[in-house]
Length: 197
Image (cartoon, rainbow, N blue to C red; front, side, top):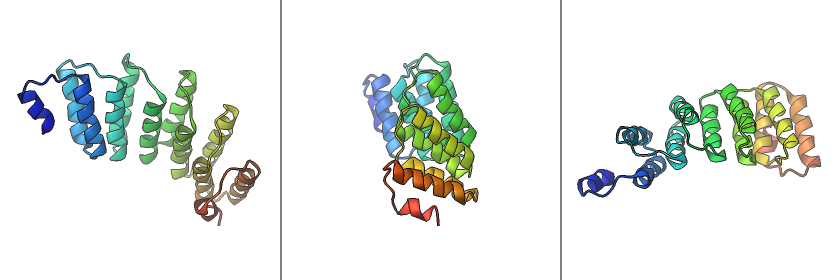
């Protein structure tokens, strides 16, 4: 409402103003309204930037509207707007919520090919996407690839892989990973141990 009051008072509706509105929608879990603002920007020929896409994708991810988030990611990839780690991480998390583990893994591969920085939080989101679907082999493969790419394993990504092993009935793999966590000084917690019992 405030945004439209701004329009009525002839305050300029530029990228900055729309991004503020999109961020408010994201934080208020108003993903449908966020998409309306996103489309309105195109209709009014207001430039959309990385912040615009991130807020819109994040709003959809928080609402578990993975298909909408995926569509925004594809739209962004086809545009000249610069992709960054946060965009990929949010899109991977959205795919995970939608059970689209293969898309999540594909985004990790795309990050490497596009020379976008792959960090621990993004890796955790990808491993978690595999874990939610019980794709234990893929989750473990991602862990290995990440350590090869100098991404430090953390509790969150290991727990996601342990959970995947548990869902797949791969208890031997789970115990091996737990042993590796201990040897590598990766912190364990109650989630870690509940995943292997």
